[in-house]
Image 1 (cartoon, one colour):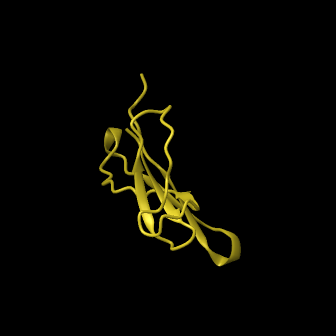
Image 2 (cartoon, helix red, strand yellow):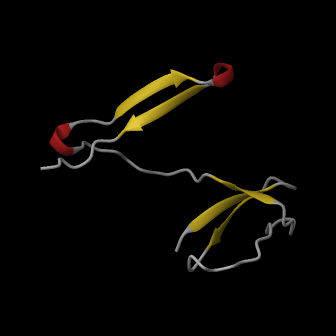
Length: 82
């Protein structure tokens, strides 16, 4: 059951919608203002990363992006392949 987050384009309210199946069709409206104008937003994840296979830590790479912003990428260690 995927949960998607949306932001209302009228009142900026953030809300979630649970879909019971991949083929489910749903009328989505803002629970605050009943607007049907919204955009899907990327949900924030809450995850604690521990040590990977062989005790290696995630590698964090930071770089400069457009207009002075910074971006980060994470190389997360996975299982060791035989």
